[in-house]
Length: 179
Image 1 (tube, rainbow, N blue to C red):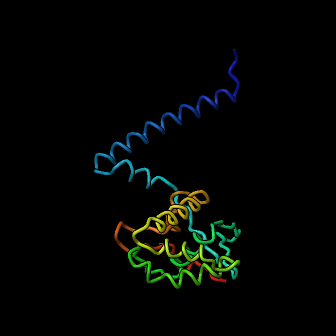
Image 2: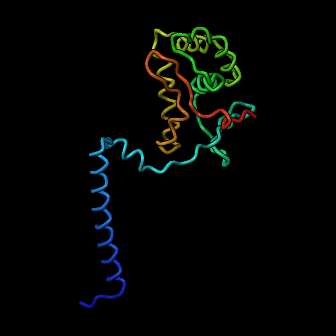
């Protein structure tokens, strides 16, 4: 069988790729010997995408970036998210009862059909530090952003923080646009 120029080019590429992979493995071993963990190495190899603007429209719809891709959340989940956006300093979950009225006002604006007894009970639940409701809402928020953004930047949009400490959204507020 005759080798064509394309076949030779392909073989050359494979050889060079194998060579590069071997070099990379050696460098990774060196980094490990200097004390870097595999996780640290992988994290530094990931390309970092720029953070996108988060736009909050007048009617409380959320959009990402200049292309205005809508971020869909249930009304109560979105209300919790907006509450944390309004508090860049963060909120400790044990202090959620102090934010009950503010969350109710936000929820009333986000949920156009008004605050029923059931809606008020949901607000009571999410602001009760003895229940898991706030954690469930935060998990839903994480899921939404994780499905829309690269993992390396999605966490900037989450509500996060160490257990028992203040939770906040770390997205720089100059990237949050309130219309």
